[in-house]
Length: 307
Image 1 (tube, rainbow, N blue to C red):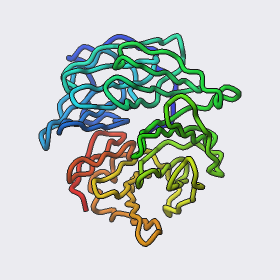
Image 2: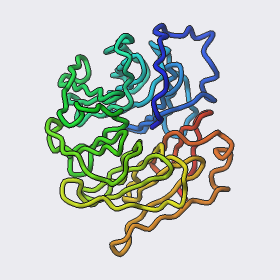
Image 3: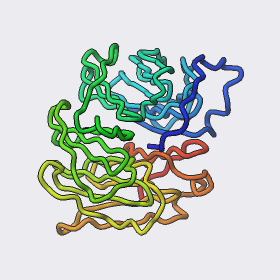
């Protein structure tokens, strides 16, 4: 997930004949469901791919920067600047606007649904909203822990035990079992955290500025352990493979984290394996899909077979 930029004020969809070269555009987030992958990014761009097919651009109802996308079955949601929330009910073939409020001056940075009804959207200056009707309507949630000095809330994810984790600026890490009451964890770090990856039965790996990465076996009970990636590049993307390995993207590099004998082993994937992604201006998001790693970059999407 990328750091927040200045909110876009452009609200109208771009006619198809003047759309930018979408396949080489900045892609900020990727999601997959039922063999369908969706990517979202600059100027409201939405990309779609089925299986190993080619990426296709989908007509978008907005030109606002889109920061995140989430899919369940054929339903999906995307969020971004102008406090926009988009919805799809046909596996990403068409999208409609569920909410847009440019005057709010608070972009959404991430979205997560625990099922087809219950969803959460987080963003700048403590922006936190939830929906109980599948994203049709949204209400602002006042989280007491974020009220005094509202940080940017960069990401929200569901862990493998169904609890929720939020990360943000100033080392913010907050855990909840019900999405209503939140407990703020101490990771002994005061910078921004951008990425969450579930790990183990109850744990998580989080990554942020200058390669700062932390792991806990249980955010409700266990302390956060600092992990050394050997990189000072910010961690903007991560995902978990079916075998339980955690993959993190930092700059032009991808790291695999694997727990072995109670220790987290970190391996940097060979640079030559990244191919032309090394020239793509950096990885902005990472998705593990079947036997592939798919990355969004500042100049398009790249796919690689799992090493």
